[in-house]
Figure 1: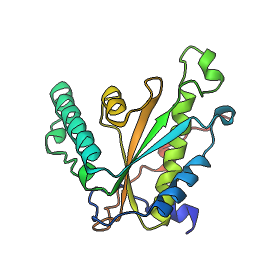
Figure 2: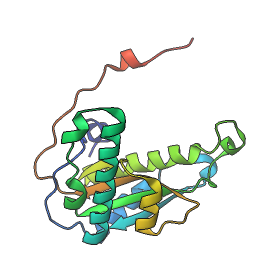
Figure 3: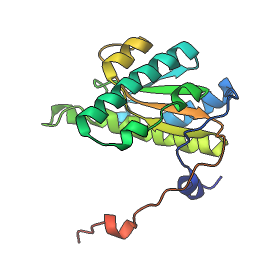
Length: 190
């Protein structure tokens, strides 16, 4: 699949078929993640592959708790109807966990350890594109409390879950969402 076509066509999937995803396909997606750039080539990511119904249920409960907290805190009415059933429906969830100690020179700067998160985000983008090229849908999910997800998955307290990626075959083609014109988002400094 052409890279530009994959970037244009990939969409977030929120409705998955119950079909399992093979370990071979998961490993291809994870390998694609490891090709992402990282500061000083630290490769600050780890991956937790979740297929357990029980673990997915705990993640769903935590995400739902956070959804209700965010609704109360923000007043954003759309959160009241935002359905997160895909967390239980997706055959696979992959937690991308970053190590703040494996960041770049930014560790000495005022804003601190942020480059490891950017590297994890690059790995996540590679995962989305790889999943799409293999005929799978995916979704980048961050509505969770990091401390709780660390407990659920047994993640080292010194590391941070950056995102959860849902993977599986989509029930139907996800809707295309509009993009803003690149010219409206670009400034040239000459």
